[in-house]
Structures are given as structure tokens and as C-alpha cells.
Length: 83
Length: 184
Image 1 (tube, helix red, strand yellow):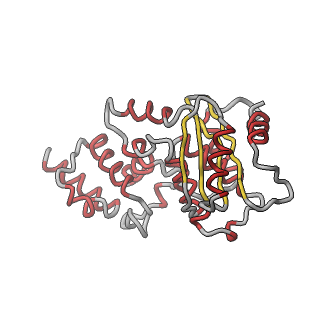
Image 2 (cartoon, each protein chain N blue to C red; image 1 turned 90 degrees about the horizontal axis):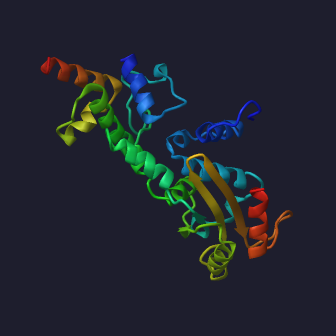
Image 3 (cartoon, rainbow over the protein chains, first blue to last red; image 1 turned 30 degrees about the horizontal axis):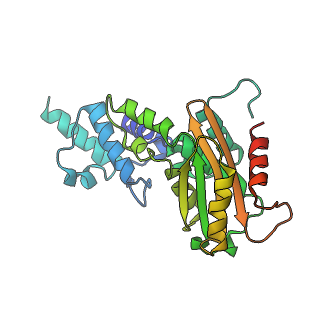
């Protein structure tokens, strides 16, 4: 999950944030890391660029992008299904 | 701040942000035009501006430049070769810099962004005076914020009804003189 945190920081240009500042189960949006709707789009770009994953159903977004852990689980599940 | 070498614009803007010990994480997500305007506004307002004197609707922002958002438009276009960047796309309008300045200080007054080949002090004086004289605004931040590649330029003016110790009259001649002084 550390790599994923590093990728999130780079993709979202969170210059004053270090990977260890982001908790595995910390909410990414609003009261947690404070990301906004444009950041959500950038996270979709990150999944496509880094993991070749296209989020097929927009309604999955809130569940997938809830925390770093939920993102990591989604990536792992997707990779297992396409192995 | 930079004694060794002349920095690239992004480095320069971050150095200014750090020099003034500003705390605004969204700064890092802005494009260069918004960063430049936002920083110029922070510096303009840090010396004696009393926001409490005004209602949010009383403070407006009127800016101008020569290159609109072309600097970011080009960068955004380049990302479309691979994957278009949503974070860049939202800055492909020049008036977004006004939004960033207004959000920071909760200003909700009239705003406008004009494109001119060069700074048109006469137009700015006339446009802003009209809004102040007709009580549409009580205060206005106006001027020039321009970025294209390595070239950048920002001159902002704070226009208020009440005179302060260091203020000068809001005239075309004074705007021109100050803008020229800023640019050598």
C-alpha cells in the first residue's frame, strides 16, 4: 500500500504530504485527506495509467475510492480476475 | 531567494509560497497562472487590508492579460496524447485565477477577465471606476496576471473608496506608472 500512497501523492500533487501521513483506513474524501471531485477523476486516471484498470461502473467510485485499503483491494481483486 | 541561478517558474512560485509561509494545500494543485495571481493577491492584501470592512459581495476582482490560459491549454493538450488530465482541464480558462483568489478570501463581488495585447490602464480604470461609482463594488482588486512558458508578469492594484497612508489616486496615469515600474 506504500507504493499506492506514493502514486496517489504524485498523481494529485499533494506536495506537503508523505506516504506515512495517509492512514490505510483514513477516508480519502471530505473529512479525511480532503480530496475533491477533480481528485476523484485523477484517481480514475491513476488506475488506468498504472494498473490498466478502467472503472466500468461510475457507481463503484465511492466504494473503491473510500480509503487506500479499499483502492488496494480493488486493484488486487482486478489483477486476480485478469491473471 | 535565488542567488545561484535563475529558477524555472514553477520553482520560483513554490519558493515565494514558502518564503511567505503560506498554508494552503490547494496551491500546489493550481496551474502557473493561478499560482501567480493567487500569490500576488496574498502579497497585495497582507499589508493593511481590512477585509472586515466589507461584505463579501462588496469586493470584486477584474484582471487582464495577453495570453489567456494558453500556457495551461498547451500543457493540457499535450496530456491528451496519452490520458487527458482532469486537474489540468479545470484550469483551461483564464478566469479560474479569479476564482482561486475569491475562494481564498470569500470574495463574492463582480468579477471579469479581459484579454488585451498589453496592459490597458485606461480600460481598467474606467471599468473599475464605473463599478465603484455605481455602488456595485466598494473595493476591487484589479490588474494584470500573465503567464506563457518562461515569461510571467503580475501587477495587482487594490482599489478602495477610502484613502490610506500610502495610497495614490486611481487614475490611468498612476496605473500605467506603477505597472511600468514593476516591469523595469
